[in-house]
Length: 421
Image (cartoon, rainbow, N blue to C red; front, side, top):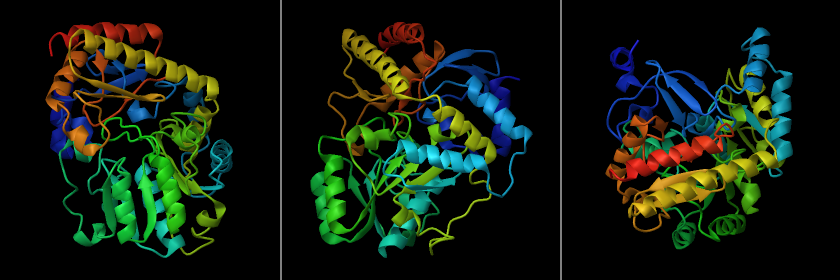
């Protein structure tokens, strides 16, 4: 069946034809393709066209698609049953694996999505501190929790929305928003409010890729400690993607709570929230903060997560960072040679692309980039079989399955596209 035929069927039964808005290509124009299968660094659509994939399930497929060890682990788990609503050994093993890799995490609660993890972190922070207000940063995306959709990144940014219809004023009245990397703004917010938590992406990866400026995360840690506020790192993207212990290990910052997703589930629906036992023990059944999920700790997802983490060591991250630097350096040269003003950003194993004459350090500057030119670049690459994120507010992901030859081929095609921009 053709992509067009599938899209027509999807539009008839699924709002907008997609089950997550950014898949609709609204930000770049055109119609999405439908994936039939994926292997390693490659996607193949329903019409048989091959694409080199730099989306990689939005960062989840760090080993590449259909990694044999993950597939084998899921198949073994599925043969024993897909869901029990009762504890399993794999839940315990994955919790132990997370705690072993991230020193700030003494206990962890497994859930099924990053949104659930963010929701749980906010509820735990409020329950532990007895406070209600949350500080977040414009352009950071923490899932589609009502109170955190205000000035969010990712799909909200892609669609140009300030928040979401259906979110009541009361749902966001306890959310204070400050620009990312804005230390004076944070200081002013703390002078006005007592916060239960500061929620931040340690590397902002949902407004495009925007690294933290020097001292920003340290300031958040110190200010939060001084005010009795919990610092929550949203490592749904960065956790187990930028290093063994995530962004917090790379920056040497110890958050009070951490949120994980994507890589930790090996490509299956799984996420987690973790932190010090003294905070996590506020969760039921030990404490008064309620959280539950029928599919939390799903046996297939935990098996996939364990299989993924077992293959990731420091050598893996060094290699992934080298490959990312190869892509980033090559793109910078391509655009320099074509005399196109561009900011190709890199933070460890993550990369981003802004068509901007000046560096991007916050959401407002990301909005000021030339997103129309990004759309032209996106389609030029897609036409040549290279799939970058269908939005200038997203991040690119190299996987361990991307070879040097694949990246070199990508850069050759990018040079050709650059001449058309």
